[in-house]
Amino acid sequence: MSAASQHGQQMDRPRPLPLFLDLVRRAGEKDPALAAAALNGLRIYQGAERNPPTIRPIAAQAGRARLLQCGDSGPPIMLIPSLINPARILDLAPDQSLLAFLGEAGFRAMLLDWGQPDRSESQIGIAGHVEHYLLPLIKAVGEPVHLVGYCLGGTMAVAAAAIAGDQVRSLSLLATPWHFDGYPTGARDALASLWGGAKQEASQMGLLPIEVLQAAFWSIDTDRTVAKFAALASDHLDAGGLARFVALEDWANDGAPLTAAAGRDLFEGLVGEDWTGQGRWNVGGLAVDPLRLKCPTFQITAAGDRIAPAEAAIRGIQTYSAPAGHVGMIVGSKAHDHCWNKLLRWLATR
Image (tube, rainbow, N blue to C red; front, side, top):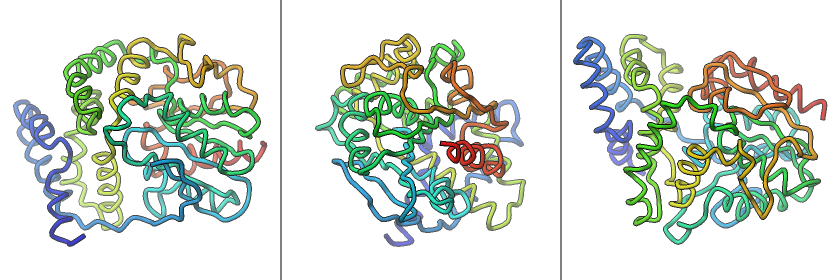
C-alpha cells in the first residue's frame, strides 16, 4: 500500500469521524479551549507515521478464523479476543504483546483472529462462532490447550470450555462480562436505543458495521473520548509515546463488522436479556454454566473498567481485581504487573 493511500485512510479516523467531530463541537460549547486542543490532537494523530504490524505464522485455520502463533514449543495456549475490534490488541506492538510475553515464557502461544465475515454468514450468531470456528480450532491444536479469553472472547471461551471438556487444560478470563445485569441501567438503555436504530439496516445488510459498535463505546464515556485527543496535543509525547497512542487508537477504530445475528445476540440476548447471567445461553445444545466447568478457572477484572465492569463478571470463581481500565490492563504501562504476571503465575500452578 502506498504512503498516499495509507495517509488517506488515516484522515477518516477516528471512525465514525462525523460523530467524533460532533462530540468535539458539543464539548466546545462548554469549553472552547478543550475543543481546540482536541482538534490539534486529531491532526497529530492523523498525521503520525504508522509502524508495520508484526506478521505471525498461521498455526491452524477454520474457515475465515485463524490461529496466529508465537513460540514453537511448550504447552499450547490460545488467546481469544472479542468479536469487536481486531485481535491485535493482544499483540499490539513488541513491548505491548501478551501473545509474545506468553511465547517467551515457554508456551506455544496462539492468537485467534476471527477474520472478516460476509453477508453469507449473516445468521451465524455468537454461539455459532463458538461452534463453527472456536471449537474446531481447539481440536486442531492436537492436545489439551489453555484458553485465555478477553472481553466477549472470554464469554465465548466459557462456552468452548464447557463443550470441549478434556480438550481444555484451564480457562483464564480477562475483563469478561457474564452477568450483564451488572451494567448500569443507563448504559444498557443507551445500547438498546442504539441497536433499535441500527437493527433494520443490519438485517438488510446481513452485517453490523464497526462504526455502530464504536458509537456504542463512545456513548459510555463521551467526555473521555474528547479529552484523550486534547491531552495528545498538550502532553508532547516522545516518539515512543506517540507510537503507542497511535497504535491503540488505530486498533480502537478498526475492525470487521459483526454478523447481523451476532449483533442481535449481543444487544438483545446478552445486554438486553442477560442470557448468560440467567443461565439461558445455549451453545451446541448445552446451557452454559461457568460454575460447572471441569477445568480450573480464574479471572482478572479491571477496577476501572467501563466496557466490561467488574460487576458484570462471573460470580463465585477465583478473581483478581486489577487497578486498571478495560484496555489498560492489556496494554497499559502497568499491564505486566497487574495482568500479565498475575496470569502467568496462575498458569504456572496448572
